[in-house]
Image (cartoon, rainbow, N blue to C red; front, side, top):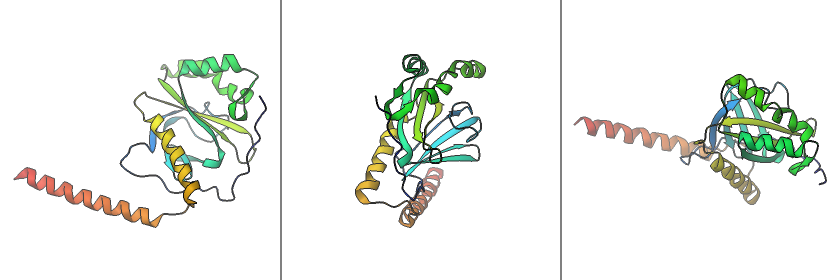
Length: 203
């Protein structure tokens, strides 16, 4: 398999506004270990949240964030611990889909067992975010572990849908003032309805 070259990135690498609605498919919670990234020092170890934006995603651990633009994304995959180990054994030294060199990705896949043993728990599933680093133009991987009930499949589908909208509508990654107004109005309506419900319940 031939290695796929790094794409040309757009001048604007802003990830746009955060997707906020009632579908509950625009974020998921998990855990990140600093050894689960092929890039050193980008995030500390701790509870993580992955948040979808119109033009990319943001990974947040405590108050530290790392943004990935859609043009950088190679793939976002949901995989079990056993699937990742099998991938490591089967593909060591080979080139994976998307041009992901196993030598790069294997550094974290090969260390899963020791990390899981140290944390005294085996995560139910991992989310593998494979992307191009803007500075080095090389493929990288970030792993996030999460529980089975986290809406990972829905998040992946929503990310693809939002990216398709960007292309079809020529959507620009700027502040969407209209969206902010809509959200504010929705919150006001919710608060009014909540107050009415409390008052009626007390009668």
